[in-house]
Image (cartoon, rainbow, N blue to C red; front, side, top):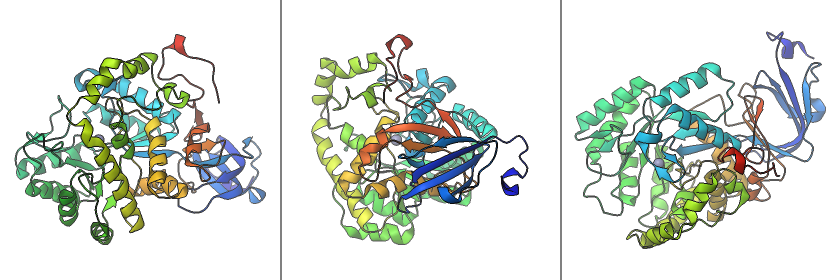
Length: 448
Ligand SMILES: [Zn+2]
């Protein structure tokens, strides 16, 4: 063992993973026969297996034939909103439920999540503990706290104090959120297919963005309409957390976004796709079903539910919104807009973990390569928050890792062939090993 590896770590726990194909999250092409040396949960060395140092007291794992990538980051989720398909912030927003969902994300290989504006104060306790402990066994959370909602308009959740009436109130709210320790700021500008009278006025969005920037925080926008995206780009918003869905956009806005450094951090294609079904097409897929309770599957399959969804006045509008989102994502990607990966999972019937894998598949269907989709979901998502802790396989970062049995660059659906998930260098149960969403008596044997 080299002196370097021993430095300052007399009782260090050292793990060597060797002979895997590396997808490092930077966008670099996969490299075969690589090794990693992990010390106390962090990446100490990465490179060709033939050149790897050989620490004496290390635990070594041979990952020949396997693919190793950074744990997935989902840039748009909501925590603690539901139990099964029942959504109720007042009832379910608590630390136990938040942490249960963070464990579920981890089982699916999603090792970090950004939670988007529906958080009460419990999230700050969870995050404070996570950052103090470091070597946790659930997904890492980053939060936008309470997002800013224009009073009477669309956004937020009932029961959470987040409505403001004037730009001055919005600005004061951002200041309060920054003081609570939010990692970034969120605003909503939408009117739910014109079913709500007003969208957030531009003077208010400008106040939010400017106040956040003065405090050194980025602002993330919920948008639906092209015109709002264009104006928010001019106002200096940092990222969009949904695609433009009212129409297909030409390349002009992409060029402006690229020039101004505005990112499309989440396109939530899986969200838009999910709305086009009365019965989700994967309810019997074991990769999905293992993450939910049997009662949830029964609730999804209930004829009355399907009838209700299908007869909603909004239901006929969703296919166009979905296809616009797919086309606009493709246009942005082609024109050099920086993009991440985010699902908007967490509200009712938008499922933690599973949706991240579906989102990656839809991104590829829309026109980017599997490697580009994987880079969006790892290195790019991490770059948004400027974190030096996660997102790529590089020296010094936490060993938050996803090990796959099959090549995700050959077929993006191979992200589901989860062999192992590591958080800070320790294995956590994968969805194939645990029945985390299920009652104990309904838990079948581990399958792969
Ligand atoms: Zn959302």
